[in-house]
Length: 218
Image (cartoon, rainbow, N blue to C red):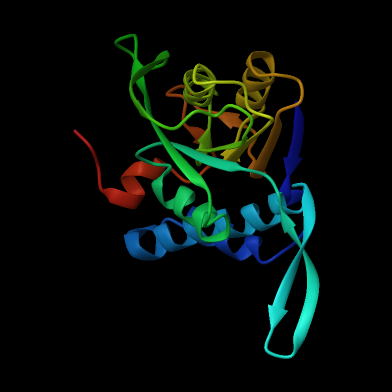
């Protein structure tokens, strides 16, 4: 698996990342969601450079010219619910993409809340056969949710390419993902943080993305 960590080069994404990590900034859900979307847009733009292109002749009021356009048939999939604003950022760039949605969420499996399992109960997606599949989920902590979504989507067919995108990952999540996806998958992260705490939250991270976007869940 190829790993692209966008924090290794400075860009305007530094500003977006600094703001979503700031606990004072997080008090405004609208601004937080907007920055998750903007990170998605920047990452989608970078990812678009890796697609295959072919020229298309475009007629203007004054003539014609050939412009290289992506020839990939993109299917953009996300993990509910935290992935929705991140997905929207990608969709603003890949606005012709088909879309898929997977419900995969963590459940603590012990009383101390230090061990987690992943439960998948819903998926709505077209076939991924022959398509460029992009799976987006803001948090790659243990990697369990992403692997569950990947496996569920691949049951509908074999994609031509697979890209996985996260805002923040951990070394543990990256390793687990690499062990459970095909070798030609590419992982994109805006940052890879040092690790997780005993409750499997990314440290320093920025907290629970779904709660910060939409409010705390029961």
